[in-house]
Image (tube, rainbow, N blue to C red; front, side):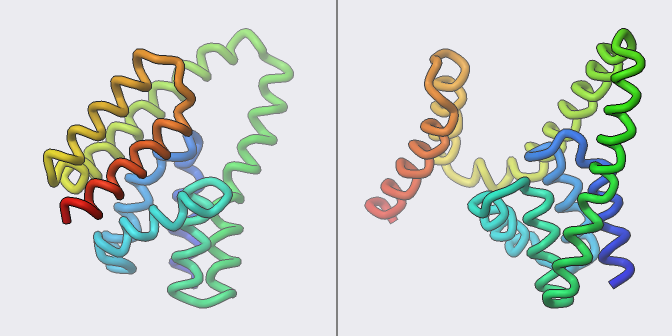
Amino acid sequence: MLRLALVFLKIGVAAYGGGWTIVGIIRTEIVGRAWMSAEEFVKLVAMAQITPGPVALNAATLVGYRLHGLLGAAVSTLAVVAAPVALSLLIGGFFAKATKSGARLTEALKTGTIGLIAMTVWAFAPAAVSSGLNVAIALTAFAVSAFTRINPLWIILGSGVIGAATRAFLG
C-alpha cells in the first residue's frame, strides 16, 4: 500500500500538464511494475477517459481499487492529488507576488508538457498504427482539427463512430 501511495505521489508531482501528458508516465509506472499488462493498461486508459474527471485521477483510483480494494482506491486517489494541490497553492501565492516572472514559468511548463505528450504518443503509436484504417482515421482527425473550427469533441466522437462502424462492417 505504501508503494502504491508513493508511485501515485510521484505521478501527481509530474502531472502538471494533466490529461495525455501524464499517460506515458503512468504507463511506465504501472506496466513497469507488472501491476497491469500493456493490454490491461490500454483498457484502463479507456475506462479512465470515459469516467468524469482527469485521466491521472481516474487511473489512480482504478489501479488502487484493483490492487487493494476500496482502501487502495482512496490512498492512490489522495496521493495523486496531494502534490498538485500543494503546488497549486504554492504557485498561486508566488504568482500573486511575482507576475513578471510568471510568463517564463508558463513557457517552461509548456515545454515540459510538449515532451510529456510526445512520450505518450511514442508509447501508444505502435498500437494506434496497427492498421491502415487507424492511420487514416488519425490523419483525417488531425487534418479536420488543424484546418477547421470544428469542436474537438465532435472530432473525437466522430472518429470513434467511424472506427466502430468500419470494424463492425469490415470485421
